[in-house]
Every structure is written in structure tokens, then in C-alpha cells.
Length: 257
Image 1: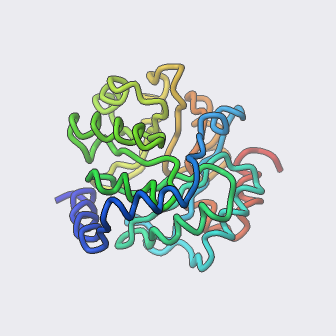
Image 2: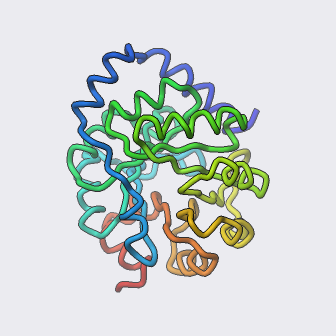
């Protein structure tokens, strides 16, 4: 069983325990306010940053003690991030829906719920807790699920970051006319990193889609390489939370001093 398979089993168990009636989720979604469209902010810079609130990961274990995710998100906003990503998976990443809600309440930027979305319920839940964007991992879904969940995201007013790891997965993302496509350099089966995936896949993404480079971006050299491959945005988590000075780290990665 791969790491991805194990995570998905835990995700399914956990949302069954916390499941709320859809009517209650609908009321919560109204209370959260209108969806913040990320497309403008992602296209406003030559290279945008999706900055991540991330306590831990399966590959690295504990990364940082984040007692106040809202405060960290504010630092990201002040540093010039275009979107804030919040890990809500608890077993491997140490995240929660409470983190998502607190971040959404603290900043004006669009917020991505970063989780393993494998059931319709999670999409209503994401909107109820303030998500403007959800993550669709092609490797975790059938082609029918991918299409259906993408449509459901749109019906709920949210955008979807469609994550791919191979040419075959990219073709599926293109088939559903994904507006935001992320290329993840981390192999979800063994957790290894291969930045060559950026050069192999990002140039194949249609020009109208926002192209996001994900995982393993920790140096200025990594940023330059991703941008040369055609990335419009970077999703960065570990480098920002481990450095202790997220604003300085982001400026250094972007070559701003």
C-alpha cells in the first residue's frame, strides 16, 4: 500500500466521525461570506506565491510548531503572497478545519483547503469552513470522480487546483478544462522529489491555465528553475515555516533581497 493510499484511508475515517448535516454546512458557508476568486491575484505578478500553513509532512515529520495559524497567514499576506494554503489533514500533516476557519477570518486573500478530497461531503465542508479553492489530486481519483468533483467545486463557487504528477494525469486535467493546474515534483507513492517533472510537464499545460509548481522548492535556484519551466505560481510550505522569518524567506526565494 502506498503512502497516498494510507492517507486516504485515514481521511475517510476522520470525516465520517466529524460529519455534519448538509443543512448546517450550508448555514456555515453563508456565515463565511462570498468566495474570494483567486484568479486575479494569481495572475497579478510574474510569479505568484501560494504560501502554506504546514506543521508536518509524511516525508519530513514535524516541521514547525504553529500555535497561531492566523498570525502566520497575516505574515504571508504582508509578504506579498497571492493565496494562503492551509493543510487540514490531521494525521500526517497536523492540520485541522479550525486552522482553515481562523486563517480565512484573519486575511483578505483567497484560501486553499489543502487536503485529500475523496468524497462529495468534503466539498460542502470546505466551503462551510471558508475555502475559496480546493485541491484535486488526480492520482487519488478516478476520471469520473475528477470530472464530478471539479464540477461540484464550481457549483459551490470555488476554484480547484488540479494536481498532476505525470503526462497521463495532465491529460486528464486538460480534458476537464482545469483553470489551475499544479505539477507536483513529489512522488506520492514513495515521497521522493524529482524537479525534472517541472520541465517535462509545465510546458505542456495550456497557456490559459495558471501553472503552479509544487513541492521541494526551498532555494532561489529552485525558484528560478520552476520559472524557467513556465510556472506562473509556486506552492511553498516547508521552506517558509522552517525558516522562522517567513517574510524574509519569501523575499529571498523571489530574489528580492
